[in-house]
Image (cartoon, rainbow, N blue to C red; front, top):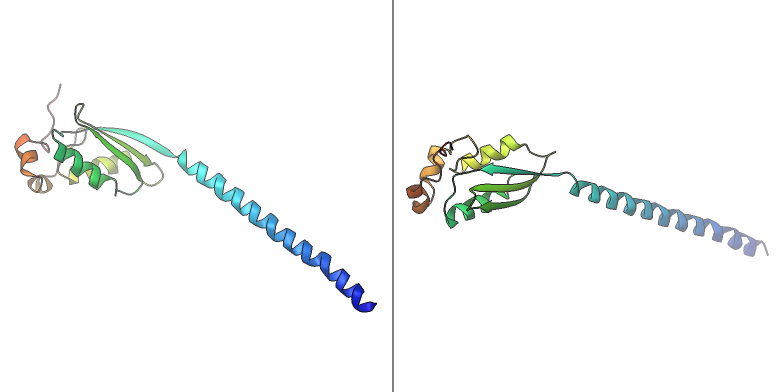
Length: 137
């Protein structure tokens, strides 16, 4: 009878331990989901006026800018000569993104493209003058 009493008394402790584990896991899951949702709200959008004129310009900028720290998406609007960048403001700044564009050889707002990078652009881009400072309107 003593053995049965010990076995009976151990069971609630195991259930309590299991219940504590489930509650801990549930709280961890809720915290993780809340943090993940909070990160999506921290993105900022930036429009950079640029000197792009052709599909190669678009491809070069989109393929390279997406790897910049904090960048979530990049879309080049050739018709408007604007780069639309969505980024995490905690990881980068508008100034850093503009400088990254100039390092590719393209103008970014009032910053001219890097001359060395401009010389490495495809010939079509060099002929069109993609990296040259934009004319004031």
